[in-house]
Length: 407
Ligand SMILES: [Zn+2]
Image (tube, rainbow, N blue to C red):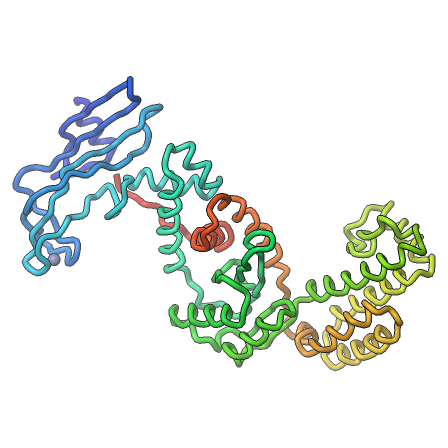
């Protein structure tokens, strides 16, 4: 077996393709494999894949980057036949080792894809000595393909959540399948319009909008408007964690004002906000001690603890009665931020109580959010929305990237 046969075998080349020449330049750290096909060969038309194959019209030379051969960059160069199809005329035929239009072999693409799932694209570009932009395009191609194939036919509960692309910059909204905790759709903005785009996405996939039975979101009004318009059959549940965050903010406003007269409250911010279950023993006793001081902050805190009991109700009537009593108490607390928060809760009554029936939260989405943050870090340096969407799908979409095979 000579080196040509050896490399042909390594590449999985089948007739009519063969290796014509191997050029190895240790100085340039470069390996070139020149491919050719047997004279008189016929190739299928890329449009209609005509069985017999079409005669070759002429050839055009192309070069592909292949997997490195140890420390050497490897390239394939071939005369690619342009065939003459009786129906479609002269067309460039496809080669078995690369996608049409790609400058990489399939094997190179496969390795790049595997690496992009584990590390930042810019890092992959460095390791593979490839252009980052080209890798992004490659990744986007395969991710789009995987999303196209993904099965969303059982999506019923959807969480909509926003995140900022960068601090103070444009927002994006992720729509998540709460059943399978995966990102299904990513859109720019957080407007009513953004929800419409999700509706259109489902339409294109042939998924009836009525299939979405529940939405879970924060109390951002444009979301509600969009959901009501685009998904009139769906029930909207306001996310309980966002409700509690709203109330936490109120507590902190009370504390910040009070700290002037009660310096002991200084640096106690997290004690009032954190869930007791996540506290250390010391923190818990600090909190217990502070709570006994009869402060306004402590009072706001008690109102929050009581509100938290709402989430345990399983009967909507009971829950509503409870919330009414709570509202009365909160609005008579004479704590301005607490009253404000209670009024906001009053305005979102229905969606908050909806939790009793739907039991859904965007809690999983919050878990996904940390993945999305990772994704954004990985997209660092590339601010285009398209790339951001690509990496979010890759990290949080639970999609199956089809690995390029052959060669
Ligand atoms: Zn044809």
